[in-house]
Length: 505
Image (tube, rainbow, N blue to C red; front, side, top):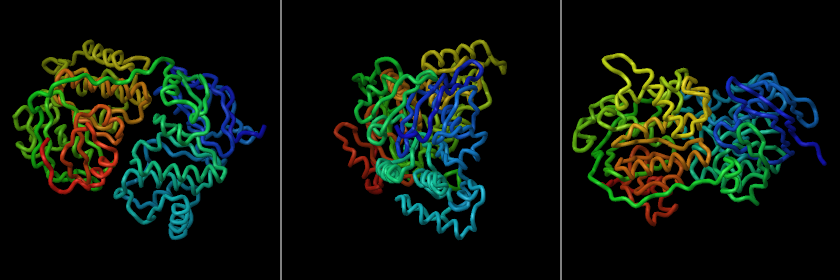
């Protein structure tokens, strides 16, 4: 037996009210792509933070090539050859690529030398980058390249990747996998976290499954179906979302000739957007990140106002109304960014339930807050959407990303909106939670709610949408019924091959 690159032995980490990791043990071999699977809150993030020196285990040991390994901070982990690409990018929009990479280096070389090195490494691994481009002008896929190249410049022995394909197009995923396979062939080990199980089956040599903080099994992904892996993660049979037959009602939301500038210097202006969504219909809006998705949600939510007639709800002009007025009417939204936009990180779940539920749930009276009713509403969300948390008094930031996403979506769904606009509803959540959220959206539509689902997950859009439109450089294509729509046609629409004329549904 060869010595593994990294051996985890009985790692345990507990927080108040929860044991995040409970006696977790497994090995990662040299030149191996090892998947770490588990539901949201299963303990994956805590485990990789211990490997990377962000969290100190309560007990257990780690061995790196047979030697004791206990990094007190990420700097020490990087010095020992551990690199990590986080799910949420840590880049400064106003700086260029080389400047961002220099900030993550202990002793960066002269900028000219670093730029040359960035070009060399990025081209070697099939991820070409211009070191002098401003990061704010980059697509989400290009931003991820910056994070990866920053890691590769360290010549890592182990590369940890957390949900690396969540912001990538299918073509960009293929490029990333070519890069990871090249790294594997050169002897670099990769610890790969993803909820996209077919990707795991394609890429990974072995998988370790965590459930409720414990290692509950291992498998060879290529020899295991995605459903079997998902059921190992949840410990029960996986339910597939069911779409019931339904008739569409009258037009609930009508957007006509909508053109607005982006409030962000690095955003994308919306250009002559038209769409109609009927009661009971799910309209899927796809596109590569950075093509106006945030601006579209902002203008539909009322955070960005426009001409009154540009947006009509049940025939009533609402373009000038703000978010609170629209919520009162029944137009609700759930943005992509969980912490800071959809939820206040340091507020409790009860307080976060109040933030968007106060009007429709009657949680205040003449300026006085009804805390008992608000807590009950938060508990209802936690129960209905299986949010893993000790209780509603816990802060939003204490939840795993997927559990916070379930809370955010549940908070809006349970208010029974007439129109619901969601951006990336299942981003970063596990298979079971994704199925639950998608079923909740379908159930809402079956009750007559008009739904606009903005997502980069094409499988998700095809599963729940009745019609599909692509957003490209701020322009929306003419919606097409999803019946018979092929992946190639979707790719062309996302790439802007839909022409400049845009029709109504």
